Image (tube, rainbow, N blue to C red; front, side, top):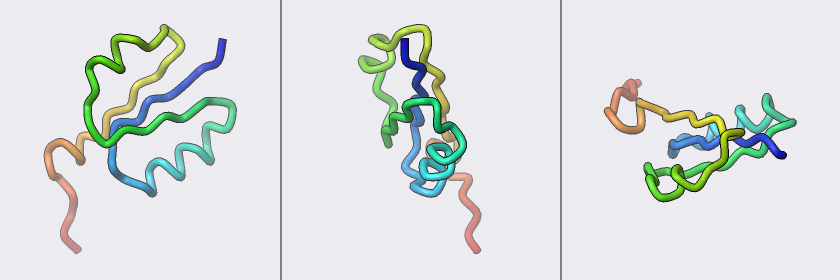
Length: 61
């Protein structure tokens, strides 16, 4: 059974780094929270939610 990571974020840099680090895992990305999709995942799925995306905590540099 393949292990997968579901990243809920629109941060392209975060997705790129995660794919580089987790080479043995399938990385799936979505910019929105998809309850239907989450319900259909198996128990080998790790879910990462980027809270900056939801709450707008991004720093303004």
